[in-house]
Picture 1: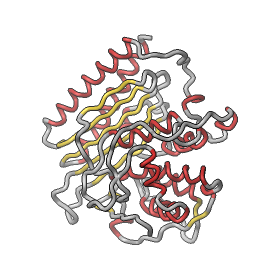
Picture 2: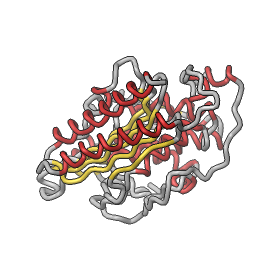
Picture 3: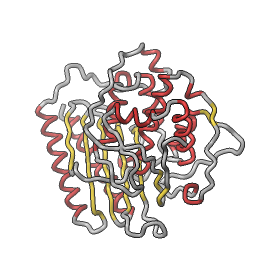
Picture 4: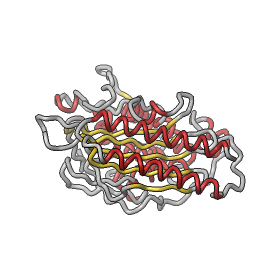
Amino acid sequence: MPKVCFSIIGSVFIVLSGFAYTGCKPSANKHTLRDKKGQQDSGFAPRHFLLKTDYSAVTATQIQKDGVLRLQNQIDSLCRYYLNNDSISGISVAYTDLRSNTGFTLYPQKRFVPASLLKLPILVAAFKLEEEKPGSLSTSIPVYEVLNDVIDRNLEESETFPFQANRQYTLRELVQIMISHSDNRATLSVMEFLNKQSPGIVERVEADLEASIPTGVDNNAEIVYIGHFASMLNALYSCDYLSPLHSAAALEILCMSRYQRGFRKSIPEHIRIAHKFGVRFNVSELNPLFPVQLHEVALIYHPSNPFILSVMTKGSHVEPLRAALREIAATCYNEIDVLSNRH
């Protein structure tokens, strides 16, 4: 395989394709909007047609600014509480209010192992390839035949996808499986195809979004910061990098994630969230001293005030990390509800 180094350490699929976070503002040129009918064909509309609330001439009012500051103080208090708990040793939180374009980041200098969050730039790269070579998503490709026990047992929080023997899947299908089930065989299959069709495309996407990941680092290296993956969700939401049609399709796939142990438990069931998790379990036979790490990034479609939430955590046991994800998401959503009712 070209320039792809992978290893499942406990449960983590690592693609050593480079990271050195330098910001969250996409550097790509903006696409113009296509016609509304074209958006609906994707099955999931981006912000211009999904959000029905009238946002005409919206500015960051004092109420909104006060609300974000109040939320920041609440989340900061939670983080301090978690850090005083022996089971959580590190945490970072980033919040962006997409209505007022305000937000905050707590503990931004903390670094983490990215784990399966690295599947997010691979998703974006697949749709970038479709824009460069139309029809790529419909191409049938073989499933990567990896029978290594450490890879196949997939200790991540989602189940392994039950691939059918002797069947080829399209790139679109494998990308969906990669996100919905966080399946590593699907990921390896997608990566191999992308690199054959456009060598280095994942690294190029990361660079375009000013979120490159350094190559040649150890699988255990803590190399990502909280803002890295949130910048990709922001680019999809604003349609700044991919076309509106492909941004919408990528968000639709992220809404299919089956992960239920984090943000999803705290957000009302009828509210769609486009999200991806990453987990690095402490597997004793591989590295007994390395902490558990659990992360989640999401675009949460609150009906009157959508927002992006990113939480990265590490500690000695996974359940306190899950609880932290749930409590932070609930606090954000409830505060947005209060803020929305004041308008």
